[in-house]
Length: 239
View (cartoon, rainbow, N blue to C red):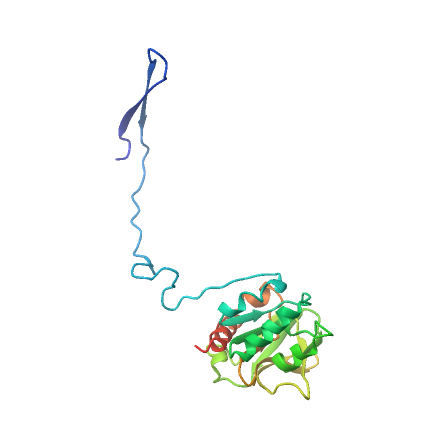
């Protein structure tokens, strides 16, 4: 209780012969305090009834790496590859593993720097997996995104148009690239030029979404972008 008095003793001895014993006594008085009753948790997961190594319904496991040359061995256990790196991918086994992943009917979400023409000696990456890509962009700043298709699952809960502070990529599609369906375009607010910003690739087996947005936190923290990204991963996973 508040302002209540308490005392306790510590009794200890050494291992001497005979043993020496000492007692320390302490007394204290509590100050005033409040009992706070916490509300029922919004969500409580006890993991009861779950088999070892499994996740609760609706949960997913995410693995991140900034070393793309290490992913070949883990792709077999992955449902969706989120690819946003522009680092070198020189390892032939990794390149093959990514294409095997697509040919196995898995999901791929290619975001921002991942759709750049990063690898001159691996042109099939952009041509086959993205249908094209970007080689330039506007200076970092605000522009407008307009949805071309509002009823696609990737656009669920995304406003029909919104402004974002980002890099406006000059995305273009290759004449001999895998066909695509544009879902949203980006518009420069000064000169009115527009470029594809979000699309899905009509790959014969894989479910692939490309999102040109996403340079930094100004985009990542935007609710419209968050919704689009969540939807893209879910759609690529076939959910």
